[in-house]
Length: 172
Image (cartoon, rainbow, N blue to C red; front, side):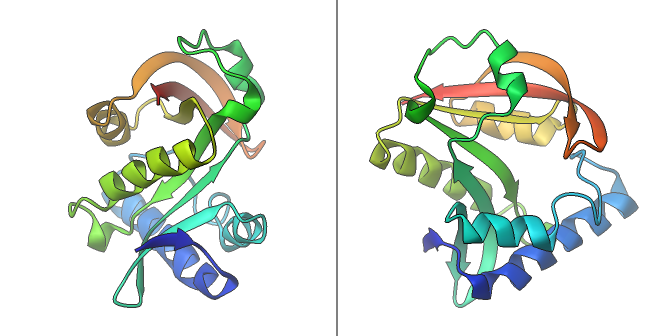
């Protein structure tokens, strides 16, 4: 079941962030996220408080999380989007996370499919997202689900971490 997260889910979401980031420290990174900088318990709690965090729950266990909102970073304005839309017609996917112990079971695909359904319910015409330009698994996953690469741009994650981003979009 995929649902809006509640305050009771924050610790599980944060634990998945920590698990993923520790795994990346030990095994190489596919993200540009950094432990204790982003994502964190406080960023999860903020998204929950804003009603923007969604979780996939199975048998009482949080297996995946994602933030869905209409917040486009300033870098989005630099992109040559193929599918123009007003800001209120754009759903933005942020911080899709599956703990390493649960990867490889189609959970990310379920979350992407949910984002598509949720976007339609919100009367959106387009879904946009960005991810670290070197995150090949994420780029491949999104492309498998019909997203197209729009372009690349430098950015500062949380104003602290320099990164190169790839921007992608999907037309509903």
